[in-house]
Amino acid sequence: MKGFKKVLAMLLAVAMVAAMAMGCSSGSGDAEEEKTEENTEAPAGDDAEAPTEDEGSDEVLKGGGSNIIYVITPSVSNPAFKAEADTATAKAEELGYEVKAASHDDDPTKQTELFDSAIADKAAAIICDNAGADATVEAVKKARDAGIPTFLIDREINAEGVAISQIVANNYQGAKAIAEKFVEAMGEKGKYVELLGKESDTNAGVRSSAFHEVVDQYPDMEMVAQQTANWEKTEAYDKMEAMLQANPDIEGVMCGNDTMLEGVCAALQAAGKKLPVIGVDGSDEAAALIKSGDATGTALQQFAVIAETAVVQADKYLKEGSTGADEKQLIDCIAITSENVDKLAGFVYTE
Image (tube, rainbow, N blue to C red):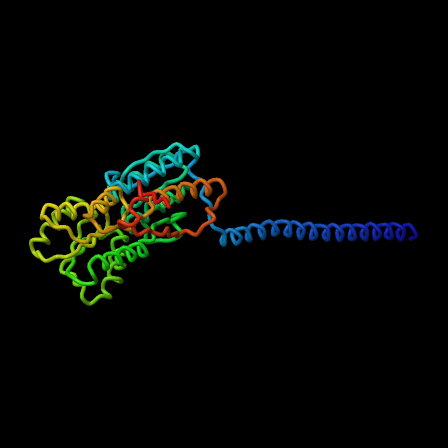
């Protein structure tokens, strides 16, 4: 009996030890499981916060990877656009970039092809005087998606946050300033006509509105005709010739740009007339007509300043991730008349 009790006591002792061991093992497993769950959740929490940080920051475009800057403008047969292309090219090369300059000829399809070429060439940046406020938006977005920043000059697009910079002449201010000179030259009265630029170009509407904000204040000023000549010299000549035949008593002409001013002055010369005529651009051709007395004045858009500013900002952005300026920037125009025309050369005004 004593032997049986002794064996039973030993078995109970073993059972107790086993139970304690199982209890310890179970507790350790729960702890490890909890620890594992905590470790798994922590990185997930960090990842969840990352997108929140990015949501409030602006994406910095690094460029396509090459050292090429594309300069895309309307036809360089227009002296203003030639000044843009030449100035932008010279400044970019001075800063150490390779430059590919091309014209879209105001054709949105051709412009899209040029943007595609820039993307294929992995361009560092694009400087563009665009072919349409609406038509250009998708091309700029496509370049942006490829990491290539676009810097627009002279003409804005109907979208913000797509291009890095939109640097344009203060067309409203400039057109108003030269319209005041027109009213003075007209003696605040008389019949006049207006030639408008390309309808798809926002500048055409802005300039015309600014002209009329000044001229329409004078009840004795009467507009007898208004036609579009699409920024073109030959078309302006033809339209002016037709308007003179329909309205032989025209006493003045407002032109949306200097190229049309040239055509108008040529038509007036052919008709043996010399009238007050104004334009907008500040070309050397307009300056010559002002000096000869065939034109009254022009509003100088500082194309060279605008183009150079865009290249400098592109370089700064690529190196620092910011231009340090707002997206939309206005460069004031200068009213050019016989009084200060000698200070103008190559779209550069020298005090």
